[in-house]
Amino acid sequence: MTPLVIIGCGGFGREVWNNAQAINTVAPRFEILGMLDDNLSAENSAALHRIGATHLGGIEWFESAADDVHGVIAIGSPRARSAIDSRFPERRWATLVHPDTTIGPDVTLAPGCVVAPGARLSTSIRVGRHVHIDQGVTVGHDSLLGDFSRLNPQSCISGNVMIEAGATVGASATVIQGLRVGADALVGAGAVVTRDIEASTTVKGVPAR
View 1 (cartoon, helix red, strand yellow):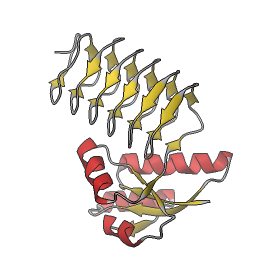
View 2: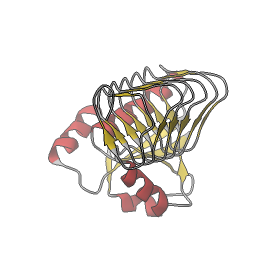
View 3: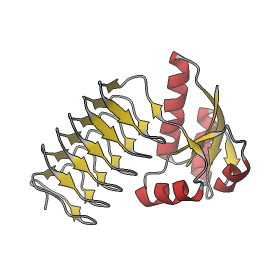
């Protein structure tokens, strides 16, 4: 089995831990060594204990890990994920796809991606490095999800949409077919995107402004 460490002990980190456990239930694939966090709070420490996960230490633990140890970055911030990826350019990154997902034909997932339960990806979709596709997300045909982007729970990405690097689409937000969400942009929860969104901007509402 592939040795695995999860970087980030917050709520999403524990969800990713559950992803890995669910994958192993179907077919043993990962030896989950534990989790890394530089600033583990007492609350998160207690939560790890309740689910049976082990805190191995700070992120520096990864620097001296064996070559075959894979990582997955379970931190919501796109900038944080990008910084950690840059810090460990030679490291191997696991891709975790929960068994309760639909991944259609001609869908490619780059290293470090996390696909949570209930997500549905149709066909001819390209997903970049360290992308997070959270619970209940739908992604339509011919879409592109750039590196370090994040789709929060229940968001809907219509067909032929481009989500550029580092962009975040909020919970239950919708991006209409054929549009572009620029790099590092933020689409607020529940928003409906009906026009292209420029890079590094925040939009919210219906229609999103």
